[in-house]
Amino acid sequence: MPDSAEAQVGRRYSAFISYSRADTAFARRLHRKLEAYRLPGAVAAASHLRGRRLKPLFRDRDDLTAAPDLSGAVRTALAESDNLIVVCSPAAAESKWVAWEIEVFRKQHGDAGILAALVSGDSQTALPPPLRRRRGHGRQPLAADFRPNGDGAQMALLKLVAPLAGARLDDLIHRDGQRRMRQLATGLGGALAATVVVAVLSVVAVTARLDAATQRSRTNGLSQFMLDDLRKGLKAAGRLDLLTEVDRAALQAYPGEHLDRLTPEQLTERAKAQHALGEDSEKRGDFKTARAQFEAAWRATATLLSAKPQDTGRIFTHAQSEYWVGFIDWREGDGVGARKHFEAYARLAARLASIEPNNNDYVMETVYAANNLGMLALRHDGDPERAERSFRAALADLAVILERKPTDHDVLNEKSDALAWLADSQRLQRHLADAAATREAQGQILTSLIARDPRNIEDRADMLSHDLAVARIVAAQGDSRNALARFEAGRRAALALSAQDPDNKGFPRQARMFELFKVRTWLSMPASARPPAPEIVRTLGDCTPTAPGPTAQEIGDFCGVLLARARAQAGDWRGAATVLAALQQHLAIQHDILTARFGLNLADESKPVRIAREERHR
Image (cartoon, rainbow, N blue to C red; front, side):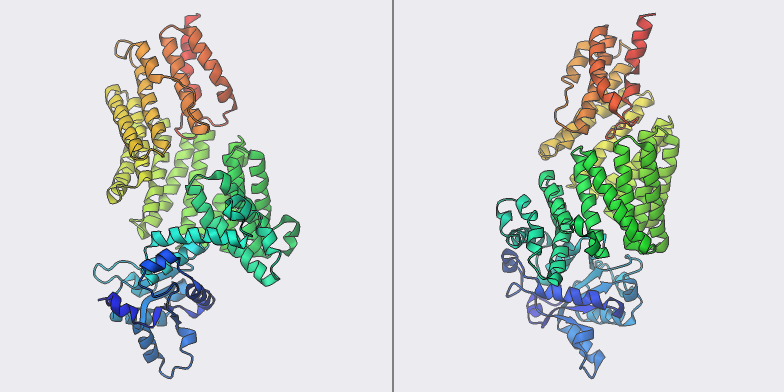
C-alpha cells in the first residue's frame, strides 16, 4: 500500500528516475528540467511541498557512482523516493535493471507513485514488462508523452510535475500557462503586457542580443512553446488573429535569409511554423499565402528527407508537407494535384508504419491518408465506389490499433469518423441497408463514449450528426413518417444542447439542418400528405446565411434550393427562378460535387425545379 502523505513529506527525493543507458541524454535533460521547475505560487500553496520547487530527484547512473553496494543503494534510494519515473523506450523495455527497479519500488510503495515518460516506441514496445502487468485492478501508470508527435514538451513535463507536487493537472496547466505568457512578455521586452501580438513579433530582436549557444536554446524553446502549447490554447479559444501572429513570430525565429546557417532541427521547426501559418491563411480564405507557405515547407522537408531517407522524424514532417500542399490543391479545385500529394502522403505514412509497425501514431497516419483519399474521391470526384475502398482500408488499419488500445477514446473517435464516411459512400451508391448497418455500428461507438463521459460536448455533437445521417437514410428508403419524426427529435436535441452550451455555434446549425431536411422530406411527399405551401415557406424562413464562413453559406444555399422547390411546387415559377439565380454564383465556383460539411449535392437538389420548369414549357 502507498504510504501516507505525512510519510511522503519526510522522504529525501521527489522521484527516482529509472532509465536505460540508451536514454541517458534524455534522462539528464528531464532531471534538470524537473529540478529547475518552479511551481506557480497558487499551485505551490495548495501542494504538499514546503516551497515552490520539487525535492531533489535521484538518477541512478550518476548518483550511485561511489556506492560499494549498488543493489542496496538502489533499494535505499527507491525507499526514500515519493515516486518512480520510468523513462519508457524499446531499450528500457528490454532492460532487466529498469524492470528490477520497478518491481522493488512497487513492493515498497505500491503502484500509485509510478509514472511513465514515453520517449520512443509505443505502449506495446516501450513499456517495461512490469508496467504492462497490472496487479489486481491497479491503474496504468500516468503516461507523459515526450515523443515528437506526443503531448508537446511542456505538457508532458507538467504531466510529471503535477503528481510529483501533489497538484491537480488542470490547475497546473492553467497557472503554468498564465505564468509562461507573463514570462514571454518579460522575455520579449514586456510587449505582451499590451497584447500577445506585439510580444511574439519581438522574438527575433530579443534572441539577437544573446550569445550564439544561448540564442539557439532560447529560440528553439520559445518557438516550440509557440507552435505547441500557446498555439493549442489560442486555437481552442478560436483566436485566429492572435494565432496567426504567434505563428509568424515562430517563423521569424528562423529567418529565411539565413537558411544556410540553420541546423536540420531548426529547418524542421521552420517548416512546422510554415505549416501552421499556411493553415491559418487557408482558414481566412487566403489561399495564395497558404500555398506559398506550404510549398516552401515542402521544399525544405523534401531536402531534409533526401539527406536521411530512413529518418522517421523527417519522413513524418515531409508527410505533413505533402498533406498540406494536397489540401490547398483540393481547396483550389485541383483534384489531380490533390490526389498526387495525398497519394505521396499515403506512401510516406506506409513507410513510417513499415519501419515501426508497432508505433500506433505511425499506423494512424495511414488511417488519415486513406481517409483523405476517400474524401477526395467522394467529395471532389463523386466516385463513392472508390471512396468506399479507401474508407475500408482506413478501418482495417484502425482495427490494428484497436487491438492494442481497445478503449482509447481518440482511436474510437477515429473509427466513428471512418464509419461515417463509409456509410455516406454506401448511401450515395444506394446501398441503403449497408449504410444503415454501418451507421448502427457507429452509433454503438458513440453511445459507449457518451456513457463514459456524458459531459463531452464533442461526442454529443457527433451523435447529432449520426442521427441526422440515419434520418437521411430512412428518408431515402421512403419511410417519410419515420424520417420526419427523427428529424424533429434531432432538432429538439440540438436546441437542448445549444441551451446547455450557448457559446457553441455548431448546435444551432445542426438544429437548422434537421429542420431543412424535414422540409426536404415534405417536398418529396405527395401534395395531399405534406403541409400547405405557406407553412413550408414559413418553416424555411430567411435563407440568408446568419454568419460568415463556408458552413453557414452551405446551410443558406440548401435552404435557398428548398425554397425554390417549394415555390415551384406552389406554381410561383418567377419566385423559384429568382431564388435559383441567386444561388448560381455559389454553385458555379464550387469545385466539389458534394458540399464540405453535410455532403450535399446542390446541383442534384435543384434538379426538381429545372425538370418541373421544362415540363411546364412543353
